[in-house]
Amino acid sequence: MSVLGFLKNMTLLARKVPGYHSLWTQPMAKVEMQDYELISLIASVLYYKSHSGPMYLVADRRGIEYLNSLRLTALYDKVVEMKVDTSINPKVFWAAGKIFAHAQMPCPSVSVDMDAIVWKPVYKTVDASAAVALHTEPSDWTPYTNKWPSIVGPWSDIDTNQVSPVNTGILAFLNDKFKEDYIQACFSFMRDFSNSKLSSQKVDWTHGPSYIDEMVFAEQMILALMAKKTGKKIKTVTSYDRFSDHMAENSMVTHLWNSKRGYRDHSRARDAFIHDMIDMLLHDFPDSR
Picture 1 (spheres, rainbow, N blue to C red):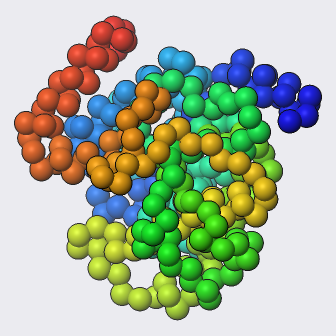
Picture 2 (cartoon, helix red, strand yellow; picture 1 turned 135 degrees about the vertical axis):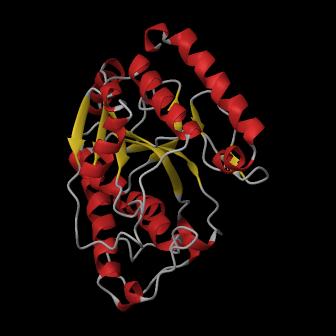
Picture 3 (tube, one colour; picture 1 turned 180 degrees about the vertical axis):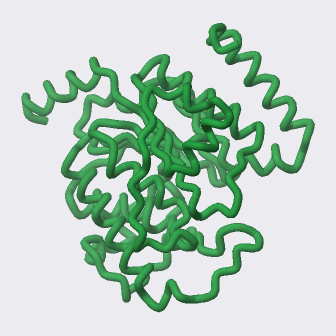
């Protein structure tokens, strides 16, 4: 690492870096969050602000109005209305709101899923990483084995077998050029797919999103492919535990992810989680009463 790069990283260690939640409601028939999701959102905002910097909300108008009706927008230091690319199919790319939000946030900044709680600063790294993600993903999972050869972009000349896709439950951007390259590659894939015959197939949303592979590829595989293409490094907070189908235990981040299925289906687990979270928040943030 050069002296200039070292000094830049030392400056990053000392500064406050904004985090942000994103909420794009267009793919949703109804905007509604469960109680265990809301308590996670509150914890996510408060803990990030306690150690890392301000927390922003990037959301479309309906999302802002929904959280405002619950008096939750007051938690954020700033509320930003999302700029939506209307050429992208919301039923295929149901999580594209995160990419829209990335494009509106500064660098460095940290994207945090609403069901992720960051206990310690994740952007503090003394190496030359261009980004920090949650963990690597199993490359043999179907979304990462599909390649869609008809959709061509700057990632296309990189062999997917040469990279490990990464989970972006948290994603800290530390390099402006890499952030821009990644975002433009995502937009390129999502726009071209949305305008292709592939996107015109019937979508059955009876049980939620029918398309998983396309969104996950756009968000998490393209990140790894662009890092390989540009020679950049992505640091991860923890690893993936195949046995539990969840991230490995760590002291940096808690991500509800699959746990939400358990809280949805088992009321006792749900009640225990909510009560424990409330007790913890009241202890650590007494002003939140």
